[in-house]
Image (cartoon, rainbow, N blue to C red; front, side, top):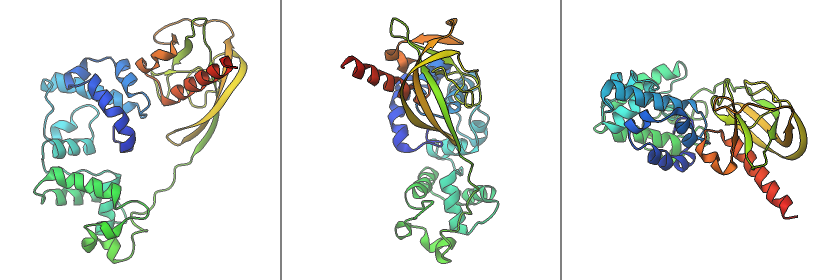
Length: 306
């Protein structure tokens, strides 16, 4: 959960996820849809799918007991080099290196590394952790220093326990290391969403396929710049409002309209479904859907109240 996501965001989801899937075996027996539903709103949904696949792999090959070594951990579906090192060192106290963005930044500044950063960072991290008396505490300490002290901008060198050994600090190159990456171009989009409800108050949603948020329930949309499916033919009615949402490098303005279907749709778990808004937490959906439903609900209450 902490991969590419801040701690304060993860804390809102962790207890709920562990309560729903308290063991590896419980997670392995779960339906993908149930896992995505509990994960909904956390983003980067491929992580949830791979977590479930990894649990299935552990049950099938290791009898449900997580292995300890980096090599064994790396053989499990969804576990890469960093995750294997984190599990091996933090859970089992093995002398395994970990390198994420925070650790790579520390190593770059500590040793003055300017090129081939990730390969060199793994090599240096390995050399450091093998000398530690507690790999568990050492790796967590590195991550904490990177997150709280050796920050990308305005690092707090006065509080850093490594300044005496830091090449970047002693040569006044803190702002130069590590070298800046080229910025990924941000894409700006404007996408209409359609809030279509039936006489029971249920909302029409459909599963999307494509590069992002696949297999999750979305509101029908009016532009295929983000989604795989073609826009749903509808008659737009009232603009309920608009809101901004960010997905990876996409900055999106969603415009929420009430609408009428031009024709009919066949209800199917693999395509369209009528969803009671009060049941939204039980189905897999991206966080923008919850924003849109909340906006429509507030607007409906406001209109009803005059």
